[in-house]
Image (tube, rainbow, N blue to C red):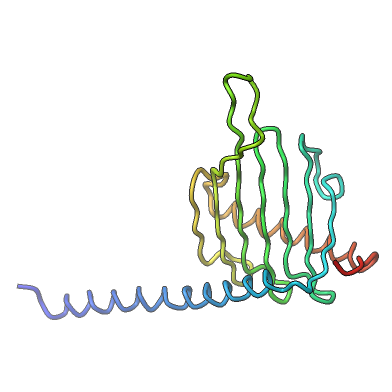
Length: 182
C-alpha cells in the first residue's frame, strides 16, 4: 500500500516542476512578442557591413552584417555568411540592447553527381535553432537537424560574444556615419 507521505511528495514534485516551467513559457511568450514587433516595424533604419568589415577571415562567398535601428537603438542584427559548401544565417534580437533571442539556420549545398559540382541553386536546410535569452543566459532552446554546437555553454558563450561584438561594431559605425532612411 502506498503511504500518504509518498503520494504527497509525488504531487508536490509535480507542481514544483510545472510551476518552474511556467515562468520560462511566460518569458518565451514575451520574447516572441518583442521579435514579432521588431520584424513588423517597417520604419527601422538599416546599416550594412560587408564581410571584410566584420569577419576575421574572408569566406568563399562573402558575408553581410545588417543592423536594424529604432532611432539610435539597435534592435536586430542579421548575419549571413556564405561558405563554399553552405550558408549560415543568424538573427539576433535585442530589447534595451540586451540579447533576448537568436534564430540560427544553416543550409548545405548538395553535390551534383552529373556535373561533379555543388548545386548552389537549391540549398537544403540542415539546422535550425531558436534560442531564448534572459540576462545573457539561454533560458530555452529549440533545435532541429544537425547542429554546430553540442555543448550548450559553448553555444551560449558564442552567441552572446557575437551579439556583443556586432552590437558594438554596428552602433559605432551607425553613430559616426548614420544612413539615410530605407
